[in-house]
Length: 108
Length: 455
Image 1 (tube, helix red, strand yellow):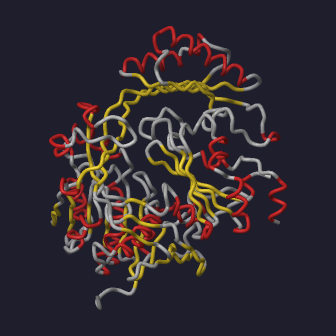
Image 2: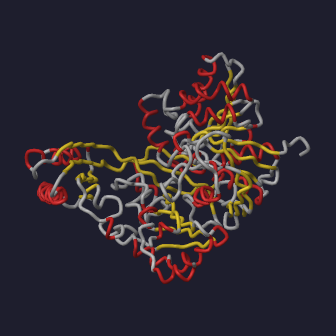
């Protein structure tokens, strides 16, 4: 089971930071997202891309988490050497995360 | 205000400079709108426009301004829809004259244009601001010195109110905070006070949801089998029905493609937002942390829960500056062993460029299709990993001069006769980097004016 199966995501850019929303399709999966997608876990997933810390904001009423990935845009859109200078594709990259099935079963 | 309309209908006609024009025409014709807003300025757009203006004094406005106005001015005038846009970019006054010219050519002699001036703060920054600290940097503005091209402050809705009080059909601005383009007509129509933080926060929320146009109606959303969007080819742009308290319904023209759902709204709510409880705007610190969405009909989503706190003391300025050149060279490898030949080509390139004195330059040696976007580490599930049937080598490097950049991309092209077998489709590009830095300035450094133009 991938994160893609229970959530959708979108990234935006702010200076050298990427903003990343992760939204559960079904509100019953929100607590699982909150448990699994810790800032540390998200930073580890983006190892080599996110140079700074990761902040997380919880929006349970929207079944959504919002992350700020500091130092993730190679200096920022306007000067980046990256092909995807905006970091637009980072969101779908997160959805590749493999979820532990034990946790998923407990929310069914 | 007894004369306030019960609801104001505001449409979003563009989410970026190059956005599609037909959906805006559809909104103008069928949206029963009061206002149609075109948000077309990205962070460095004004710096690029300023460069153009420095070579052609009668340019520097949005390149699609004339085409857009030719398409929407007729229906907007006919339907009584006022247009608000930041397509003035680095030259709002000239943009205003161009809108008048288009109106003349369309036989719409009654059209008046109000131009908002005052976002260009390069002069005051040069005189008083060189010691200001750059945001996200340990340096001061003075460190950019002669490389600075432009400095434009994000104006708030308050700068647009005098323009809305005229009888102009079209309001043209340069840099304005994107949501303020939508907040301004709400303040104007409903008589919201400049310190009514709760309502201003709700107005910013409406503006933020609309400012990227199709991104809330199913654009940038589809993922086949997971999130299917009906008739994406004919994606409609959004409009909001806003009442005097600031509550709103987001919807789109009936019959247009796309969808408006709580999911599309939630994605757009958080787009480019950091702390949802503190979205800093010139007019208010908006609070989106308690926003709720309710599906109240097909493609109709009720928005509530927006709030606001007093506005910041300072205003943000984007400073455009030159920062060297980027060399970008590419070459494809295909068939069995494509990855190995691409990797060999990268190794050869790196050796040659290191020996030519480019070893210390910031660079990316990578293979498109393998590791360009997500790096080497993020891979899909094992069953999805396979040897690609083709890869594309990419070398990007930051250098000081255009000549150096040409030398670098020529090394990529030279892989034809001097690299691994069967490379093809070499491309090379050299572009000057116009980077954006930011500073905060006191409000009293900024003064704005409005000019009304007519035929």
